[in-house]
Image (cartoon, rainbow, N blue to C red):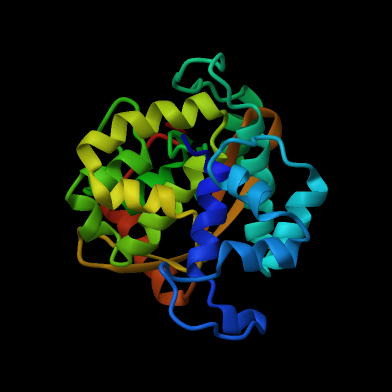
Length: 277
């Protein structure tokens, strides 16, 4: 049985070409990417030890070993953070760990008050599982008619992978899908991520599971929306971590004047809305 940490290391090794690390080409290989022996040598550990980590038989490698592997694979800052996180949750993954369960959906009154102060701006409180816990009226405006907020407990990850309307709302659907799948590894708790993953896998299929197991850190650029009204919207996202709550407050800023004007038009068409949902 593998582990999230082992899966990530194996995926990075398979996707790393030796020449990018200054290693000579040694002829035909049975599998793509970097040989296990080459990675072990660069990290200063034995092949046997690396094999145990990749196969999930050693779940508690030291920080020094993690740093050595990150250096050996030339990981960037975001990938290093992901590696450390996977080492943390893998070390705590044992047969007696807490059963999968959904995270709480409670939002503190102070956070709701902060949302009110952001009106008429566009903002949402979410977690790494994609639960949309509270939002401003502006967020409702830019997603109106898309079906995203139709359920009693809206969840962006579930919407992206199971609702066909998501591919119309997000012209860069692949980018958004990569982000949502990756963020499950950063969920409020391991058992929360397992709960949603188990729920989604049967209905979302390989589009979901392939991304979840790829461990590729996504680049979060401009978010494009094709609003059902026919307007094209482009937003910059400013996430503010609410560490004590395992939540995020994400503010959407129009990336251009055209988008700001389109949002104003949508507000006028929608009329009065509740300030906080």
